[in-house]
Length: 55
Image (cartoon, rainbow, N blue to C red; front, top):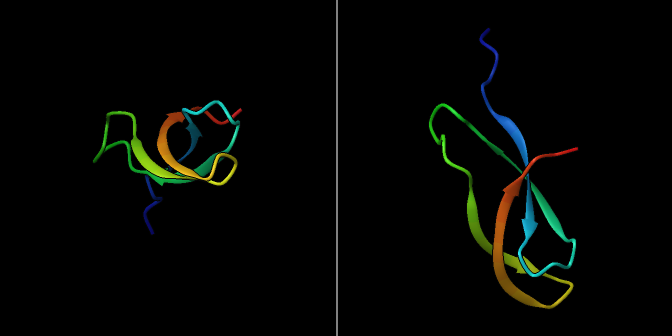
């Protein structure tokens, strides 16, 4: 069986709350960094989340 190319990335809130989601993405199909609007429960609003590295 072939190994999947998906990598795990951390989606960090741009509202500086420290809240993050963990997502998977395939760098072969989507080479640019991910950005998406998701819900931040700390400030109780939908904000932009940007991809960062997992330490």
